Amino acid sequence: MLIRRNRGWDIRESQVTPEHVFLNRRSFMGGVAAAGAVAAFGRPALAAEDPSAGLYPAKTNPAFGDAGRPVTEAEEATTFNNYYEFGSSKRIASAAEKLPLRPWDIVIDGEVEAPLTLGIDDLLKQVTLEERIYRHRCVEAWSMVVPWTGFPVKRLLEIARPNANAKYVRFETFNKPDVAPGQKPGFFTGYPWPYVEGITMAEAANDLAFLVTGAYGKPAPASMGAPIRLHLPWKYGFKSIKGIVRVSFTAERPVSFWETLGPSEYGFWANVNPEVAHPRWSQETEQVLGSGERIPTQLYNGYGEQVASLYAGLETEKLFM
Image 1 (spheres, rainbow, N blue to C red):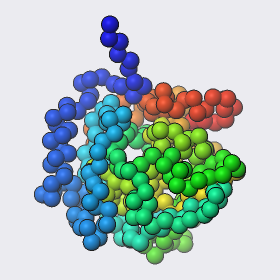
Image 2 (image 1 turned 60 degrees about the vertical axis):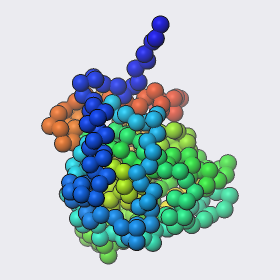
Image 3 (image 1 turned 90 degrees about the vertical axis):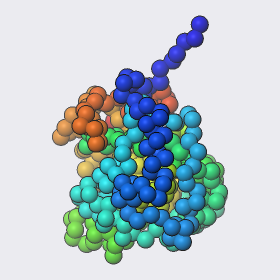
Image 4 (image 1 turned 180 degrees about the vertical axis):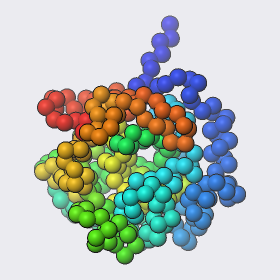
């Protein structure tokens, strides 16, 4: 007898995009005449402008080929973004395009065998890109589904070679007030730039933790965190730091950007939980971007089977804040 085991993120079949519709849409976006995608990403990427353009689209990892609900349209997902470096509006895509993506160096330091600095294209030569379709749940109670391209964080751990003292991974974004108006002095009073986030080594080694370099079958636009960002689908979106320039391995828990600004509202763990409200709004449901539909939120954003064990023994911690 065949027994089907439902995955934690499964929802009704009627809510899932039919395969032929999804494939036709991807084919449409992949063509140079795909006006909607070009509008969302800006002008088409040329090899001379982005040396990584030939790496896309990458093969879909079948283990992460279905997020259980329809993929958000590219035009919507690439133009509705929280990126405070470029302002408090969600519509920062045009402003973000001013961020130069080459050259782009990533410093790896802290509790490692030997610190190193890698250019983004040198890093890409050491990894195998794959596509994963993940849910994204913002702490503001909206959500989307994106076909991300990138590589597992655990591959970066192999490259970095952290030593036995490393307990956490601290990520840091760029600080370029000349092109990022939100980072200019006085724009956001008291904001502790650059943006910093942190996760445990166990979280970093989890199969779901993903470093993103592309989306929708091409290099990611600046608005989505290019040339490299983090994506942790079981956590609220602010944990998935964009525009990474430094990865530090530490013995002490990092204090993240939003923890510094609002420790009563934003904690270190920030795992999704519909039963734990934000101090100013409920987390029981989420608005699906571009659909007009509001749906129930799931514990760990539906990925509990893969990540719940990471938090065994940590019941005294504020895991869902």
